[in-house]
Amino acid sequence: MIAEETLVRELKQKETQAKAFEVLINTYKERLYWHIRRIVLDHDDADDVLQNTFIKVFRNIDKFKGDSKLYSWMYRIGTNEALSFLKSKSRKLGVSSDELIERKADNLQADVYFEGDAIQLKLQQAIARLPEKQKLVFNMKYYEEMKYEEIAEILDTSVGGLKASYHLATKKIEAFLKSD
Amino acid sequence: MKEIPKKNGFTTPPGYFEGLSERVLNKLEEKDTSALPSKEGFKIPEGYFDGLEEKIQDKTLQRETKVFTLKPFRPFLYAAAAIAVLVVLIIGLEKNNTSTPTFDDLAQAEITQYIESRDLELSSYELAEVLPVSELEIGDFMESSVDQDEILDYLEDSIDDLDELNIETHEEYQ
Image 1 (spheres, rainbow over the protein chains, first blue to last red):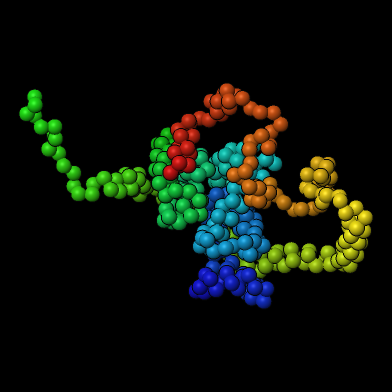
Image 2 (cartoon, one colour):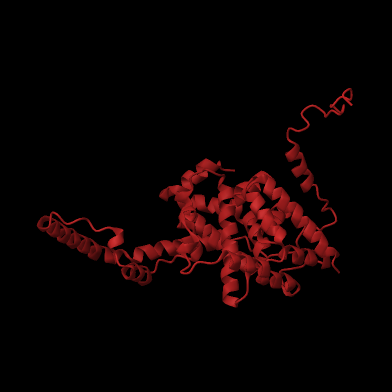
């Protein structure tokens, strides 16, 4: 795999940009897709957000100063894109972001791209009811198996706060799963 | 009573208090989630990832093309810029004592019209990204101030779990 600094340098140079961008997309498309999909839940929205994320990365690569890892920076853009996508979609529908995501989770069974069983469905419904930050931390820790340090860099928060958020999230999920 | 020593005789392992908070936090994460499914149950259309880069590259190229369509206006821009420079020079020579106009001299209406008449293509998210949050006050967005009691009433009515607020505050001060 190409070294990160080399890739960033090539992304910033006009002559090498196109090829480097292709490498970037191929390297991160799947990880970023799943990260976004867990936030927006359905495939079509995830596809929109993923494409917008890469376009934003392409347009803003000159602003990337290398203070964080490239993938952390891209994850941050992806997360923000997904959350603002949900906000603008919910505004159009006249509901809150939380309500929108709860509705999406409750209707997952009707989604052709969802093949989960009853427990997987219930787990998604439980996650959908978590506050935004706990939802992000739970997904990144539980499904993506990221280290707290990595999550802290992406969400720009403390490791201690993340551990507390994860703990609260698992407690709430447990309570929801036991609720009926 | 005087003979009873104040020390209770208890000791702690060496270095016990060092890193205690870290050990407590580590305990917090040791939540057993083994009973939960490790997959979400999501699937994707067949072959979705193949050719994705092409789709995205097409979009970035389209955006680049947009820039080229503006090129025919360049000569006019140069001409306008040259005239503007001449006008400024003439005015400057005639009125040497006039002070340079500043941003404050612009009427609010002119600024609003400038922003509205141009397709800046900025989403609220992008605007939020460039606004210096630390320098903003709540009064910059609101015409009338909000009473503290009103805020407390609002929080009481709309927040189900007050613990959540405490968590956020706690994290902020970490």
